[in-house]
Image 1 (cartoon, each protein chain N blue to C red):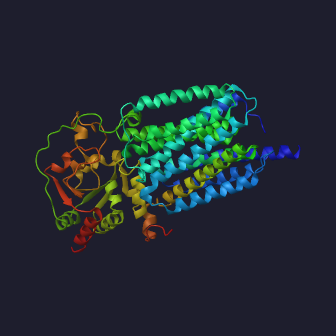
Image 2: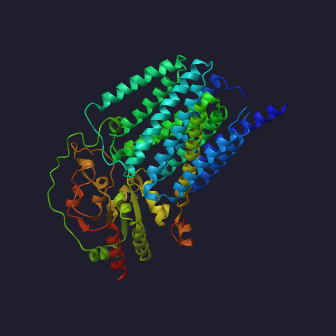
Image 3: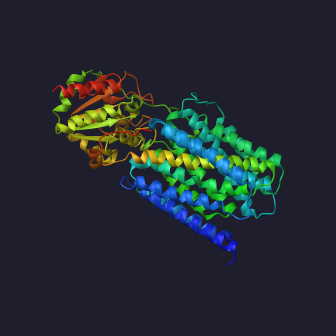
Length: 107
Length: 459
């Protein structure tokens, strides 16, 4: 793997922290819930780490824990995506509502 | 360049792309116009990152891996598609908890594997493990509370001392683990206590404060993911986790502020522990009939609707929108005024209104709309209580003093739809209900909205 020096990692950490703060900073309150849900989805990337941990696991104990980790991580990513998409699909402006008179979605 | 190098390069490029797509996705999610595409951008990033991870060198257990993804994915897909919009906050808690659990599992695997590691590696693995564990069990309790599975707020004297005691033991065990003690029993005890702490921290917190807690755990999970990203030298995890950690912290602060609570107050004491709320209420509540309200609204120039969670519980949002459309067709200026914590969490009410088909450009935040109440003929308050209580502006002894409210009392006429005469969750009498320009329309939200619709139609 490409080596990631501790200091490079620290720089990434600092810049990403400011990025997160700036991206959310000017958001209207109407989007707080979908955005929390969306950021909840984004940390579903943990599934990738869980896959690596499981992939490198040798003993039964680490395999079991790794397996649970991947199940949970996949649940985080998929569930986070589904609920966020459902919420955001509903936001429409009044022009679109006039064209589209049937309300709600039929899942 | 050998084959292995090419694969490594491909993995790094994919992770880089994923990190870019996550940030762009979140950026697009911060405006209602582009929000729906934002989650799709982030989704593409997730798929790319997950698929390329199968190409990671020196891995095995592929069958287990695929099975685990399938189980977790299908379960989450199925529950996520079925959940009602009113239950959204607890589902976010559930999925968030799963992420925390996954981060803790990574930490567990890495610590149990043993081997020589740097001090930074060990510290971050241990920190990510404890934070992830707390986020996991705490989120599960939050889910249970909002879902109605846990109804009591288990509060007892010395709960904070107990929590601090557990934390101290965790810290000691953590130092032992960092010191290189590879004993599986020590590690197991360490994780068990972290899970217990998540439970004991969350159990005493009341249901009304849960959104703030869920948001906090969301930020904590992000942090845990970032720490485990350091451990695995995975830049995508570091970036995604850190962005969520800082964004989540900001969201948590915004929410706590909107509810007029400090974070410490939410975590370490229950609502209503402070004394106060001694405002003398004079006058009486004056009832009104739906037919009269119908006339009043039909001939008004401007109507502001102030919905609260009570409206959503009564499933009245569709009827309220039908009523609004009738009024708009008659030339009435109708707008929705939303308090930041009108639903179960900031923005939740907007989702519920959007579900009923209300366009977002008719929905206004408290700051945008408050000045308009003075020129409003009818303010229709439905299922909201504390967020329209004027004592928040006037009575310094009240627990809700200083909380931003919607100035429904300043409208020419204020109509309150309410089931009975009780107080809001804070238990504070609402002065608004006793004002001269306020009339009470008693009944179920949905039934009253239906009556108003027929009253307007008859004209």
